[in-house]
Image (cartoon, rainbow over all chains, first blue to last red; front, side):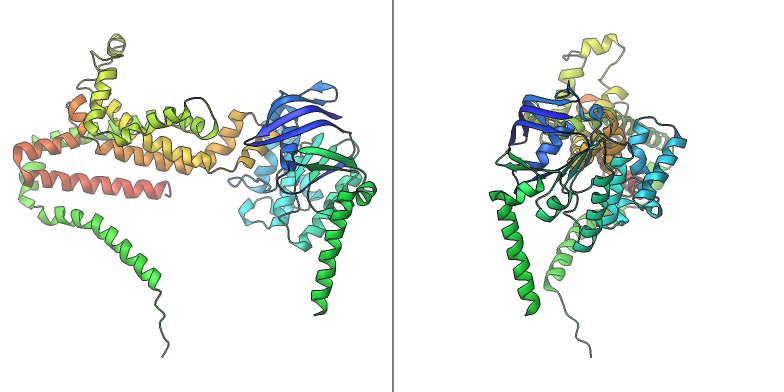
Length: 245
Length: 262
């Protein structure tokens, strides 16, 4: 379990404040909020990549506020996927295993397994620059999942995809959620459909602080959630109208 | 008949680029047009000139290569720190790095003498370690390293800065220590900048003469020898030696650029 208390974290000029937040194993959390409110900083802070000025982050009862990111073992998939451009897909997926000095045979076995699950075995010898957005996303996910991280941090993983790929990726995350037993998954988005399809719990951030935690049903009924639904309906109505014309 | 569309912007760009190429090419053409074969026969090929020229070329090449190696060893870490960290007095450190670019070459020589010369700040200490700056290889290397440092440091710094922050963040979240992220992700991605910086630093070191006149006239580098040819033998022999040197450097430069794909 991750427990955050009285946290003040800073990244550049931006300050994130979280009075209290608890994240349980086996749950899929979706972090929502408008652009620039601190969603990305929340996942970067949990990963250990920002300066924490105050408060604490505890993992399974242990204070990890000062623990560097490499010792936390929480895997991050950023919005741009951040595939290492000088490495092939195979080398990208190998990277966290090689860093852990894992035996070559086991590395090959793990790459074989994860690339089968994510259907990227035909891409292993390609360079990231030659992949489509959807392929890059699956590779980034494979690289994060290959070490079986206890916490998976997904920063707007679907935002760079076209609608068709987005639907396919949504299915992928839905499967990930259904098979998840022990892992905490934190998924940042500002898309209501994504949040409602995946979340066990929606964490809402506004003005650099967590302002609420909701189940998907509670979120729809809340004033914030109904605003999202309203916007969604307006867009849907507009598109239907445009379609008829 | 098909009408050919002329893009005014492209024509203007090509004209300006041609002026730039001409500006660089004309002096080169000039020196080879003015080159008289008898000067080559009289002042380049026979002894003792030949040995002196070869020895000066050797000094220039060896000293400039050593200075670039020193710069890679200490300059790349400095560039990394400047690119990645905020610390007190950072702007002063950055200013110091760029200082050799903005001061007259003779002042660079005086600075080196005041710091590392026999009667300089660290001179006695270096002397005890058997190092003497005045008229020595060490002096030439010190001059070349000093004057070319900003070119390597600034180029490599830009290289590190151009690497997206998310790549380093991901590497670290996947288990890499800062040093491992640097070694496996940042350095390979900044490699071309390191090579470009090294090439420019090498070129700058080779071209230095003002500071060398003050710190280390001997052993003679090729630049000092060209000045000596001009002073003692006149313009003709100096043109012959310059033409030979230019040709050699041009060939090395073109090959190096090709090898490191710049």
